[in-house]
Length: 356
Ligand SMILES: *Cc1c(COP(=O)(O)O)cnc(C)c1O
Image 1 (tube, helix red, strand yellow):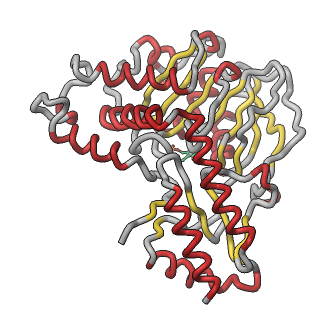
Image 2 (tube, protein in one colour; image 1 turned 120 degrees about the vertical axis):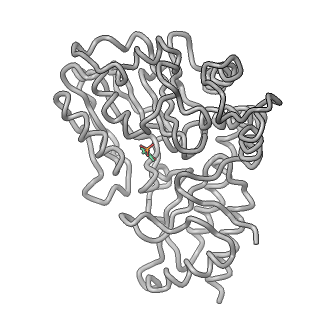
Image 3 (tube, protein in one colour; image 1 turned 120 degrees about the horizontal axis):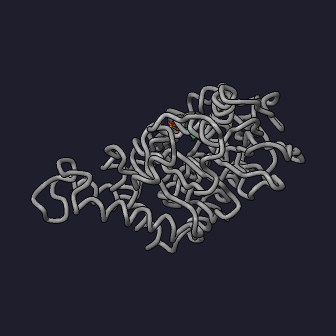
């Protein structure tokens, strides 16, 4: 039976990326060696890293003066690296969910943190609007896509003259981003880009060196800029797969095409949830709904049928649709590599269940 992969992360990758990665594990570029057993500094691997960086810059139209880094430690490491490097006195954060909260907690170790707005009181089921970013903050941080709660900020928020920092772990390359408006964008790769193990950072070079504190070598972005992401051994295999995914995105038509597909998938699934008599979306305002992580529950009067639907859907090949424990119900993660036919299969499955 065909599996439809709605996993939240690690998650679906293009089939050809998996196949080409598997091939390189067996024989890298006809070298007779595995990509797992060559030096990261080998003349063979440097072109992979260079191509990954070049594709990042090309696909996101990254202006001059920015560096693209591939690091270890996950997005969670960035929760502390960002304030370590950028917070001199005070930072502003928008609290839209679990990942924002974790980022805020780390920043507090480095200075004053002003939370400009929060949707915590309603279990993060909307994106706060009309917040004011204090203009004396060193930067304003927000989570672009709330992977757990299913809300998303696709338009760059207005932070006035304050530097912008964003966690784009789960929606990078799913729509165009005006990188010039940001000082730093980061994310774990395992949602939309590569297998787990690599973290990308896009950083404006002149944002660095202003925090006025000593920074441990490995946590200093400048170290990795100077070392070209090779200060220490980088996560070679995930970088290789990321490069393949970026080639795939380019061949499909770039981020514009990814955005078109994301909207097409989201329209289909949210439409079916809206039309349903038994399901409702957890995010009421369509403007706040994530295109990447689509969360829905059963209406109060049908609530007890949730485990039954879970079983029904699993039997029909749906994988990973159980909602996060802090929301309940269901979550269909619809990342870049998810074909529309998988969403259609889920919609058919929901209709079949409802009609019984
Ligand atoms: C998954 C996720 C993280 C955590 O990523 P790790 O690489 O596991 O540290 C952080 N932020 C967002 C938005 C995520 O989706």
